[in-house]
Length: 115
Length: 116
Image (cartoon, rainbow over all chains, first blue to last red; front, side):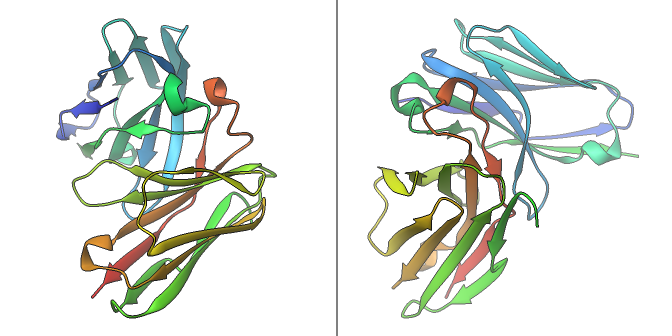
């Protein structure tokens, strides 16, 4: 059974720091991996989607990498800002059941960027 | 209205009540989803609808009853819930659930449910 783990569960950094969020998954048979952002009491916003054949994706100050063979992904945030404060969720689309839109989520990393 | 909307945003109900959650997507998508987000647990997929047909029921108790009258609307009917059902219920949509490899799901803001 696919399991997704995110470390750390919470992270607090001063503004301007570069930071890395980690995600690991137990089964490498995936279609893709996505990183989402969730603000308090809000829904999820997709940040980056990495296909299983890709190694990384970039969007602005965000860079996500994928090492499928080792079951790991990282989300790198450069020059963090207070507006980056949110919970970041990692999710994989497993090959088995993936065609039915089944995403397996981690519990998330709650990020706080202090001014 | 754009994107995915959900109503109500907050709901308090007793265990004997019957209520319904509503989701509407304005994106022209064909697939819609219900997720449950409980405290300290990962987001859990509950139901998937593709072209109004239910394609996934992730072992959800029968006290949760989904309804998808058309591709733009999705309901979750609730009856005789338990306190442990208190959670944030999120609706999502995607262009086509069969397009797994590159498919992104768009989420609504959720309904915060409290069962007393």
